[in-house]
Image (cartoon, rainbow, N blue to C red; front, side, top):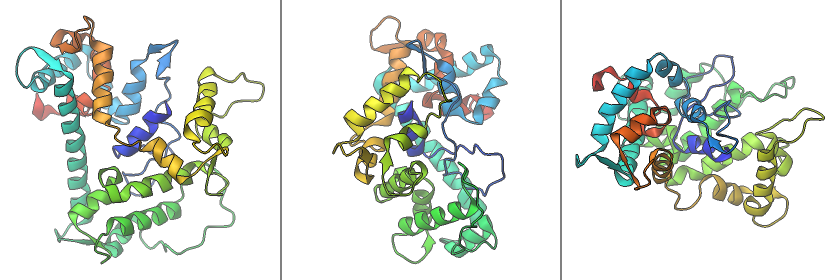
Length: 322
């Protein structure tokens, strides 16, 4: 369950969970989890988790479609995925489609935000222009208010400081202005190798509540689960504690340092599209031939419309594709 949360970080999704209004920083993840659903219930896959976790706000749009209309639209997409028109969707075809939808989301998001923040169509967007548009007169060097409550929300100042750090890292030529390519790295840090350390640092800041520069077991678990006094600890929490001690904490010192966090959330040679395609094949391949017919996919439409195969459900709501 934890890995799914950070996969969303790596594909640049925004979950704005708190009720107060926020600047238009859609590359920020502010929620404590991506779904209120359990991914597995009694060892059985729960499609509602994928639906809510991957769709976010788009889940509401999809919920307005009837099952019949959802199936009809999904069938059209299946025909597009089956590139060789042999009646089967292979894992490679599914992986290619997932990669396509990922890149389309990033491309559309960058285009929209670039136009929004760069209304004069200049080749570069300066930090001063971006800050003024998003944060108004807020001073990035302002001190935190001493009476700031200790809660799980992000203050505007925290977001400003994070944006400033991201901006400087994305600004490869150091002129404090971003080209469209650099702006893409700013918005979607997962797409640029030189931005990976920023992702790690932001993750550590989110979980490291005492600010000692490392993540304890209590902080690691507390970021996912806050049990009530006297409540029996769920089995998945026990499993997460075992994961922390046996796999995450490489040096066995009881804490996760930056390198260990990086190995955890950005595992080397991990292919998200391949992992997702394998998952979908596994869930829908009723005859175990390692490929899917249209009927197999439509039979499991509730899983697919909550996956990247349908652009997190957004593709089902795009009238121009149907």
